[in-house]
Length: 408
Length: 47
Image (cartoon, rainbow over all chains, first blue to last red; front, side):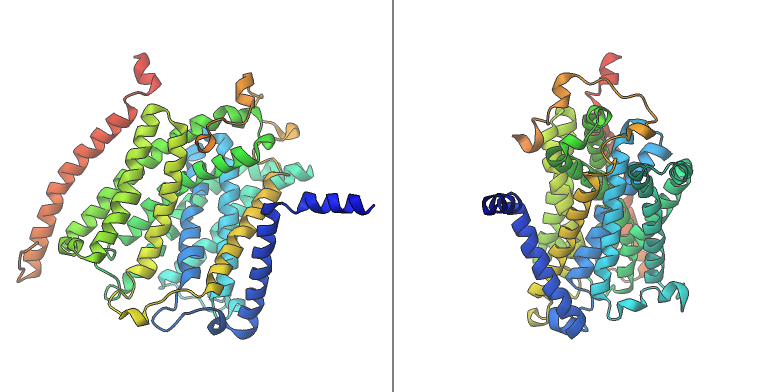
């Protein structure tokens, strides 16, 4: 009996479960501290830095990296690229969880989280950019939830409401694209109010456009990144159609991301030219700006281009990681590094360890919920009772796990 | 660069002029990049 218990315990004591357990325990501890002792006990936020790591990473990066939902559904349903159909559900799930976690993380950051619905139902401020961001995120989260619900209903075997929602797919997609266009750019527009606080190389009247265009590259790269991880860890949950379309989705999205990154690179250069900020490029901040622009925008654009030409899936996957890191770096640069750049070093903000713990805690919850849903609901396969297309005949080598994942 | 601007008009004339040149470079670069990236597309090779 005790041997059986020990074996069961060993089965659960995997490195993944131990690390996740530690993160959840620490996260729970800091959560209690945050909601009993207040923001001052767990953050280094000041009047100079009312927005810290939680806004930079959980919100700005979270929203940008969740852009895969609207880019994939727009490509499939609005632009009619049906060969990307199998990528829609995983992308919608990633986006839904991304936005849900943005709102979850926001509860830690705002002083009085129970007042989050106030701008919509009690006292709205329609002239504020932040109001527009809040309203769009609120509506888009509901839209993503409705777009994700058919998978849950298929899992539960409920047909009628599922069929009604599926018929509204195009309308939901268009609504989602409109909302995304608005709030992705408005997140950048939030910084238009602080021209004197931001470094001239990052401040531009085009910053809403920068945020929007970069979010498309982030979304496309996140879909590639997420599908690579899923291919590795959830391969047994994927059906023939998904496996057959997978490489085509990766090449198509890599090509799209390359073009968007090149466009993003050039409009950033135009931003520098219009403000005549060339002289700042010779300073330390300029070097850092060039690292971001050349190393995390131009380089991934060329790597994507080479990988698409050479049909190199491994290079595409690593480039997707580089692009995602580049977008994260950009959001950190805009909201933390270039923000208050004139302040003396002792007044600059650096997050407390509690803030890092909560950000890692939020990401961990996202991974766990994604794994829970994707391993149960029809995300990577069509439910046999709700199949709309005939299953694709797959050759034997395509049924095996992908040999090229991460290059080994 | 080292230019001194005495009026907003001077500034805008200079920066917009630079951007007009840049736009020409950008259009050609994007066209070249597109041709590079699609050169080995299967539908093109068939033709």
